[in-house]
Amino acid sequence: MDIQFWIEHSGSLFHQIFMIVMGGLYGMAFLFGSTYKVVNILVYFILIPSSWIYLIGRKTSVWLNSISVVGLVTFFLFPNLSENCDYLFERSVDFLNYTAEIFGSNYINMSVYICVVVVGLVYLVLLPLTLSRKTTKLIFGIGLIFTLLYLILIYPFFKDIMVYALEKREHLLS
Image 1: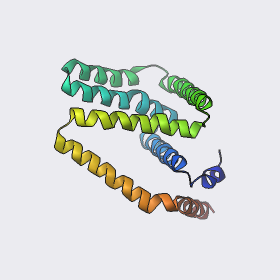
Image 2: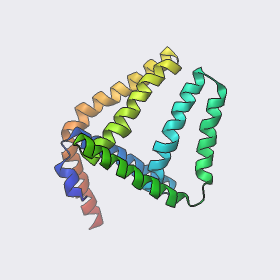
Image 3: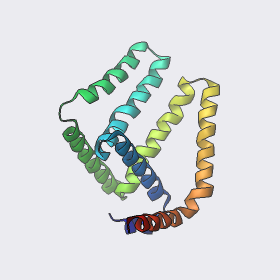
Image 4: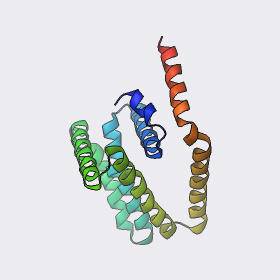
Protein backbone atom coordinates (compact mmCIF):
# COMPACT_ATOMS: atom_id res chain seq x y z
CA MET A 1 0.00 0.00 0.00
CA ASP A 2 1.28 3.41 -0.84
CA ILE A 3 1.18 6.59 1.18
CA GLN A 4 -1.86 7.81 -0.76
CA PHE A 5 -3.88 4.83 0.53
CA TRP A 6 -3.06 5.78 4.11
CA ILE A 7 -3.91 9.44 3.53
CA GLU A 8 -7.25 8.54 1.91
CA HIS A 9 -8.19 6.30 4.83
CA SER A 10 -6.75 8.44 7.59
CA GLY A 11 -10.21 9.47 8.79
CA SER A 12 -10.87 5.93 10.03
CA LEU A 13 -10.07 5.39 13.70
CA PHE A 14 -9.02 1.79 12.99
CA HIS A 15 -6.67 2.88 10.21
CA GLN A 16 -5.16 5.46 12.55
CA ILE A 17 -4.65 2.91 15.32
CA PHE A 18 -3.15 0.47 12.81
CA MET A 19 -0.78 3.15 11.46
CA ILE A 20 0.30 4.20 14.96
CA VAL A 21 1.01 0.63 16.07
CA MET A 22 2.74 -0.17 12.77
CA GLY A 23 4.79 3.02 13.02
CA GLY A 24 5.77 2.18 16.59
CA LEU A 25 6.90 -1.31 15.58
CA TYR A 26 8.87 0.09 12.62
CA GLY A 27 10.45 2.63 14.98
CA MET A 28 11.44 -0.11 17.42
CA ALA A 29 12.88 -2.15 14.55
CA PHE A 30 14.94 0.84 13.45
CA LEU A 31 16.18 1.51 17.01
CA PHE A 32 17.19 -2.11 17.55
CA GLY A 33 18.65 -2.58 14.07
CA SER A 34 16.14 -5.28 13.30
CA THR A 35 13.23 -5.82 10.94
CA TYR A 36 9.56 -5.00 11.36
CA LYS A 37 8.65 -8.68 11.20
CA VAL A 38 11.10 -9.69 13.94
CA VAL A 39 9.89 -6.91 16.25
CA ASN A 40 6.25 -7.70 15.49
CA ILE A 41 6.72 -11.37 16.38
CA LEU A 42 8.78 -10.49 19.46
CA VAL A 43 6.07 -8.14 20.74
CA TYR A 44 2.99 -10.22 19.94
CA PHE A 45 4.33 -13.75 20.41
CA ILE A 46 6.81 -13.22 23.26
CA LEU A 47 6.58 -9.91 25.17
CA ILE A 48 2.80 -9.58 25.46
CA PRO A 49 2.19 -13.23 26.45
CA SER A 50 5.19 -13.06 28.81
CA SER A 51 3.71 -10.00 30.49
CA TRP A 52 0.40 -11.85 30.91
CA ILE A 53 2.22 -14.84 32.42
CA TYR A 54 4.14 -12.48 34.69
CA LEU A 55 0.95 -10.77 35.88
CA ILE A 56 -0.83 -14.08 36.48
CA GLY A 57 2.29 -15.42 38.23
CA ARG A 58 2.18 -12.48 40.68
CA LYS A 59 -1.02 -13.90 42.15
CA THR A 60 -0.48 -17.61 41.65
CA SER A 61 2.99 -19.11 41.77
CA VAL A 62 6.54 -18.06 41.15
CA TRP A 63 7.28 -20.76 38.56
CA LEU A 64 5.00 -19.05 36.02
CA ASN A 65 7.35 -16.07 35.99
CA SER A 66 10.21 -18.42 35.16
CA ILE A 67 8.29 -19.58 32.07
CA SER A 68 8.04 -16.03 30.75
CA VAL A 69 11.76 -15.40 31.26
CA VAL A 70 12.70 -18.73 29.65
CA GLY A 71 10.42 -17.96 26.67
CA LEU A 72 11.96 -14.55 26.20
CA VAL A 73 15.56 -15.82 26.40
CA THR A 74 14.81 -18.82 24.19
CA PHE A 75 13.41 -16.55 21.48
CA PHE A 76 16.84 -14.99 20.94
CA LEU A 77 18.61 -18.35 20.92
CA PHE A 78 16.74 -19.74 17.91
CA PRO A 79 18.92 -20.15 14.83
CA ASN A 80 17.67 -18.28 11.76
CA LEU A 81 15.69 -15.89 13.94
CA SER A 82 14.83 -13.60 11.03
CA GLU A 83 13.65 -16.46 8.80
CA ASN A 84 11.52 -17.93 11.59
CA CYS A 85 9.98 -14.53 12.32
CA ASP A 86 9.28 -13.99 8.62
CA TYR A 87 7.48 -17.34 8.53
CA LEU A 88 5.48 -16.64 11.71
CA PHE A 89 4.63 -13.15 10.49
CA GLU A 90 3.31 -14.48 7.18
CA ARG A 91 1.21 -17.09 9.03
CA SER A 92 -0.15 -14.29 11.24
CA VAL A 93 -1.08 -12.29 8.14
CA ASP A 94 -2.79 -15.39 6.74
CA PHE A 95 -4.72 -15.81 10.00
CA LEU A 96 -5.84 -12.17 10.04
CA ASN A 97 -6.91 -12.35 6.40
CA TYR A 98 -8.77 -15.60 7.11
CA THR A 99 -10.63 -14.11 10.08
CA ALA A 100 -11.37 -11.01 8.01
CA GLU A 101 -13.09 -13.23 5.42
CA ILE A 102 -15.11 -14.99 8.11
CA PHE A 103 -16.29 -11.73 9.67
CA GLY A 104 -16.70 -9.81 6.40
CA SER A 105 -13.99 -7.38 7.40
CA ASN A 106 -10.48 -6.56 6.25
CA TYR A 107 -6.89 -7.13 7.35
CA ILE A 108 -6.49 -3.73 9.01
CA ASN A 109 -9.68 -3.98 11.07
CA MET A 110 -8.92 -7.56 12.15
CA SER A 111 -5.40 -6.50 13.13
CA VAL A 112 -6.82 -3.79 15.36
CA TYR A 113 -9.52 -6.05 16.82
CA ILE A 114 -7.17 -8.93 17.62
CA CYS A 115 -3.83 -7.20 18.22
CA VAL A 116 -5.06 -4.07 19.99
CA VAL A 117 -8.62 -4.52 21.31
CA VAL A 118 -8.31 -8.13 22.50
CA VAL A 119 -4.84 -7.50 23.95
CA GLY A 120 -6.17 -4.37 25.68
CA LEU A 121 -9.15 -6.27 27.10
CA VAL A 122 -6.85 -8.93 28.56
CA TYR A 123 -4.83 -6.20 30.28
CA LEU A 124 -8.06 -4.54 31.40
CA VAL A 125 -8.93 -7.77 33.22
CA LEU A 126 -5.43 -8.74 34.43
CA LEU A 127 -4.21 -5.41 35.78
CA PRO A 128 -6.87 -4.91 38.48
CA LEU A 129 -6.64 -8.57 39.47
CA THR A 130 -2.87 -8.61 39.84
CA LEU A 131 -1.66 -5.13 40.74
CA SER A 132 -2.40 -2.91 43.70
CA ARG A 133 -5.41 -0.64 43.48
CA LYS A 134 -3.16 2.44 43.47
CA THR A 135 -0.98 1.14 40.62
CA THR A 136 -4.03 0.06 38.61
CA LYS A 137 -5.66 3.48 39.03
CA LEU A 138 -2.42 5.15 37.93
CA ILE A 139 -2.10 2.97 34.81
CA PHE A 140 -5.77 3.41 33.87
CA GLY A 141 -5.59 7.15 34.57
CA ILE A 142 -2.56 7.60 32.32
CA GLY A 143 -4.24 5.48 29.65
CA LEU A 144 -7.42 7.57 29.88
CA ILE A 145 -5.46 10.82 29.64
CA PHE A 146 -3.55 9.61 26.56
CA THR A 147 -6.79 8.40 24.95
CA LEU A 148 -8.57 11.70 25.57
CA LEU A 149 -5.62 13.75 24.33
CA TYR A 150 -5.42 11.58 21.23
CA LEU A 151 -9.15 11.90 20.51
CA ILE A 152 -9.09 15.67 21.01
CA LEU A 153 -5.72 16.67 19.54
CA ILE A 154 -4.77 14.03 16.97
CA TYR A 155 -7.77 12.04 15.72
CA PRO A 156 -9.57 14.94 14.00
CA PHE A 157 -6.35 16.26 12.44
CA PHE A 158 -4.62 12.99 11.56
CA LYS A 159 -4.94 13.46 7.79
CA ASP A 160 -3.57 17.02 8.03
CA ILE A 161 -0.66 15.77 10.14
CA MET A 162 0.12 13.03 7.60
CA VAL A 163 -0.03 15.42 4.65
CA TYR A 164 2.19 17.93 6.49
CA ALA A 165 4.72 15.22 7.40
CA LEU A 166 4.76 13.97 3.81
CA GLU A 167 5.34 17.49 2.48
CA LYS A 168 8.18 18.05 4.97
CA ARG A 169 9.70 14.68 4.01
CA GLU A 170 9.55 15.52 0.32
CA HIS A 171 11.04 18.95 1.01
CA LEU A 172 13.92 17.42 2.97
CA LEU A 173 14.58 14.82 0.28
CA SER A 174 14.68 17.41 -2.52
